[in-house]
Image (tube, rainbow, N blue to C red):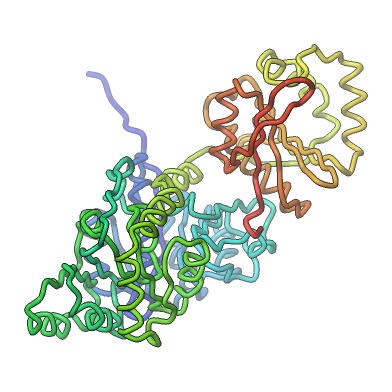
Length: 505
């Protein structure tokens, strides 16, 4: 009889909290990350210091292991508890999502030998030693993380938005924009301690609309809200702790939402919305959505009046043009592949970058004369050893050149990212060793090399020039965050110009 040995699952230990005051967003986006990790064949366990019963039940319903830490969030005891849980679970990665996990917490996790993904929203720590910092917000800025270790990788912006797997079936779905909107979805977070939902109900109760009002399991005002709706005899219905949120968003014409995790869901679903900051940490996101013309922002939910909500909502409902524009822009901003990108960053081979040195001369010469490299180059002639050696020596001592050699964790040399700096531009070129092509190293090297270069030089824009028929390179640079920016001519050849811009531009 054959003995079949299954490959052990790679495990995550997820440390996040949720409560009436904290809200549920930290845990909910970590559930989305855990779902993506599970789809890739891994397993995840949650540990929480603070949680509502409904949030605990949600984790269990999603099929994930769950435990508690008896410690003050972000404290030494908290970090030690997370380390102990990670060791017990056999977790390679610890994921920490919350504003209590500062520089000391990160260092304690790292010193214990674990790899760390820190999920952040506004650059709250004094220093970052995590292996990866994820900030999925429109407002994410590379400069927030300038005090970080050289190995710390940044995943910034909406390309990395974490969506619940239930939404992914709508990737290719197209919304039909009604001439006049009359179906309203109201969803203001899992807790809503100040009963902003009641204020929105007051705003829409006399409108000619059909509305679904969603409340979380931790909402303390649920019974009072239901009593109000029962007294209205209107087309307003209350639903609690729903799992069919994608279907509700597909049904609705417009939404009134909190400026938290739900914002990414409505953008992905192309659902035009009015946004309220139900908690202080939502103000920046709500404002950034308005600045990008992705949503209306009514600001602090405790200060806005029902009349103001009603006025803004009616204006949006009566403008099909605005709803069409925002619907399309939202779908572009959140493409539904963020979880896949983050899971790949966690599960993919980690590359280590170092500055190119004298001992790399012959290796770089070999890469330069590789057949595929010559075909991709704008000068396809063979490079002689003497010519290369002279060029290499000059480059090593040229302050306008930054070159990074990449290796795997076990020491295999993978490739090279070269950067040439001028007064007005910085240009990247990449070489991957022939033995390591086709397995995703290109995208990782481009992304990591670009981040390292920007961190070292404070460059604003990096340009890549690629032959139009080099489809593989064009796709790889786009995946790494470069965007097409027209064509130019290079040494008599047409070239696609792609650019990468600093996040704080």
